[in-house]
Image (cartoon, rainbow, N blue to C red):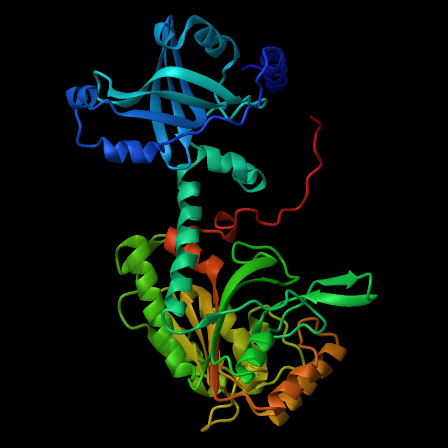
Length: 497
């Protein structure tokens, strides 16, 4: 195996010769066709029909294959749409150009080719070059197995290599882009207004999470990266923007896992004169649309499970879900002391300050969440763990809140909004006491938001939906890092260049 440093040295020598000949790193070549466009245009044309058509093309991309056969050679170019073969003959492109191809070109180089479109005797669509041009000299060799980059660590750290080598990875991020566009169109079609809210906030709020802290030098002011846009979006609803949504980046100072990245993307939307039941219906409609548009079917395959998004989702209250998916008696689920014993028996350490609602939530997360493979709405979350949600009319100990689970993980969280300013102030006070007692995820007391509520928030429902997890689901990706172009990674010391 050739040493990589020797390959780089040789390529640098080729670069020096290219520079010496003039015209290195030019930017005047203009292609007029992509690989996929040519394949589609010529799909029904055989060898003879193509010869008679006189179709010409200027293509450009990265050299992924190179077969030199004396005075004629084949190369395969890869562009954003796919691959196209090119045929280079010395007599057609000229002796000087062919010599440069032989002497200076390597796999990985970015080149341009102009010529007529033909089919080989084997039926391969090919651009028969009459001119070629080196556009960028690649100094580092591509991984040897051009068809895939197997090292997962390299794929995440050097995403550009992953995108060059892995068609599946390119497909994932193309799907991600389309999914975001579909979501945007879905809400705009329903008269929601897309807005932008601050990513740096004086008071972080909208979720129980530890924020990142930064500092503004000119104002000598500590600021927080938002953990959620919720409180600002509800301020807009108070202001009369009755349907708003934001596809936003949020930040939470938490650990890394297959499900969590400190920087992530959410859809968050607020809908005046609606409640959590309206959200459930809208969310199911959105999921069915996305599955149909992206996969072409209502049933998807995720990590070995067939998940049916076409039918109405299952539905349980949190207490019902615990009883349904565990062998814990219903009486024990409502008994604070028994829940403490059960959690301790699971090697968990319940905090003495936790009430019944928090204990139920911990039990649900530990024993039930990963069993919710088929789409399931869990409703009536305890008020204790839902500081921004409206209390249920029949039972003030729970809220009109739901979370949607698919594939064993939370996808969405929505609720009828708490619009009683006095109740909200009291819950903020309880959160502030928890923060004073050492809970880093407890919310701050946001007086400005309370002031806004005192001007009147109409009956409203709001929801946050995790874009990253939704992409994981629709692309059968096991880790959130598979659907983030640049996931956060712990730095490693470079060995030198």
